[in-house]
Length: 106
Image (cartoon, rainbow, N blue to C red; front, side):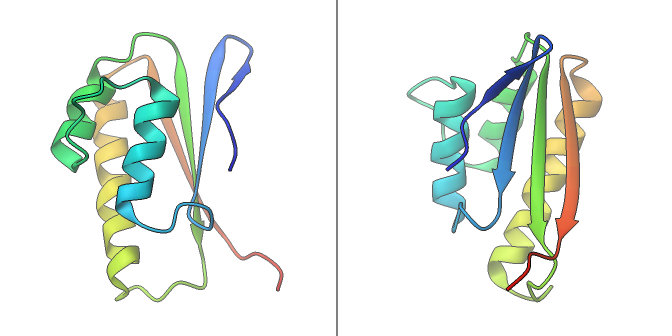
């Protein structure tokens, strides 16, 4: 799994749908990678709150799987996650989010 990378005084945090297979894993990854408190609630409301507390310039880079069916439960969860990330980035000037849909070779 990719680690947080410091580039030009901005933390680059990759969120790769292929490596993070469910929402629980994503929440664990973000808690550790972004330094959320131990009592982090592992839900989208708690994620939004913690993203609002980020003060260091941070860029979240989400890589979505182009082959995932849109009605798949995990795909819908990822859609909701991306909406929360984008909303938090609009509210917090230290946070930016890039979302790319990728078609990986077989």
